[in-house]
Image (cartoon, rainbow, N blue to C red; front, side, top):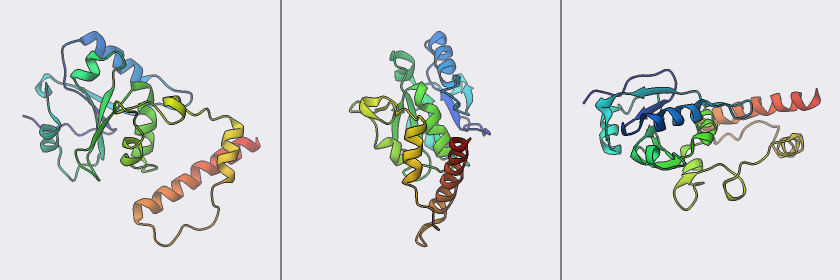
Length: 189
């Protein structure tokens, strides 16, 4: 079997070829912006990867890959009406997985790509069926209006980061500070 292709963005790999219409619907749902956010991903649809298991997949992606996770559109994603896509950790707990509905992929891709959040934070927030449907009450996304953003900003420390952070935590700290600074400026406008 051939190695998984290198891509600029996180990869959405198709492993089930039973329904082209469902694949097209899933792609459209993934690419659809949610407010001002969207998932930045590359798609691979190659029958050479038909019915690829997680174990097989891990042998085709080297541990030193520049990607820390991958999305897989498998038989369950194609056949289930919600199209829950498999998300696989390639970094901290290599092989750990959960599922996500297409409309919530942007949050996972955006946050994991910049190390703003860890895989475990999403994996531990799935519903009882193992599917991530967003943060908030009963899987409904939290509404981020100006009042919610202002409340969140007020709770963020403004000093220097603790000295005990590892490099990933340090980077996440500063990225979070930059993003929150942008929101503060936006609220003042």
